[in-house]
Image (cartoon, rainbow, N blue to C red):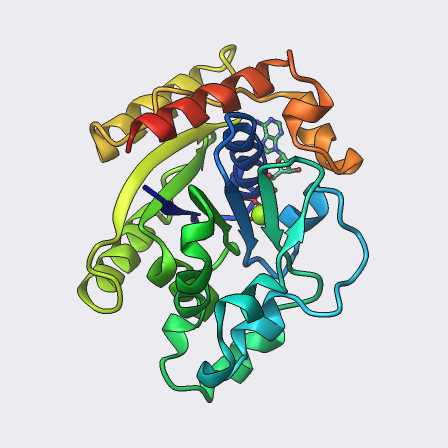
Length: 258
Ligand SMILES: Nc1ncnc2c1ncn2[C@@H]1O[C@H](COP(=O)(O)OP(=O)(O)OP(=O)(O)O)[C@@H](O)[C@H]1O
Ligand SMILES: [Mg+2]
């Protein structure tokens, strides 16, 4: 069964991109066919997989395609192969920021991404979507196109701030454009076992999400923050590092969630 999982949290710097890149790579290493969709204007997922040149066409152009021009072949032309056999990317190479304004003039503007992914969904076992640190029209497109939401939460003070707003947005999308949208799970990131604060956040998140918290906790690790500057996911940068091991464990959990 194929699944579309969106990493969402309007809080910035909580590990959405790190999770998208490394979970995608870990699933691909398990020989799952994976597509990573970069819906963040910062294009960090695209860069994190080693792409640093602008593309002739990217997701910005794809989002503005008229309905009549969308076919499987047309959508496939946007997709790039990566250095991993089972991992492809739907890249972003310039600011999607202008896209927001352009989308405002369009009909069914929340469904632009969904109608693209529908065409290629069967080519993949997993489609992961990286999203921007905001609750805007791009995020609504992400939540409308997704089957489930993975919520990375940084083990830090203020970690839960804004979560009510995110959960409320998810509820609104469930009531309107995407009734089947589920919560995949909350993922604790940048955990530091030396800090009591980290332990407190874990407890608070478990209270908020009850059973919907991944057993795997992502530790704070320098290797995880270095890997993107080499354009590599952690399993290609340092496969024995704690970060690589944890993201492999997370991939197994996600597969077992099926
Ligand atoms: N487990 C970790 N250990 C150490 N550093 C991390 C870890 N996860 C992420 N980082 C670093 O923290 C910063 C923010 O992470 P990331 O870019 O994944 O967050 P984000 O939620 O995608 O941010 P944004 O909201 O800006 O898109 C990055 O510099 C990243 O390398
Ligand atoms: Mg990001």
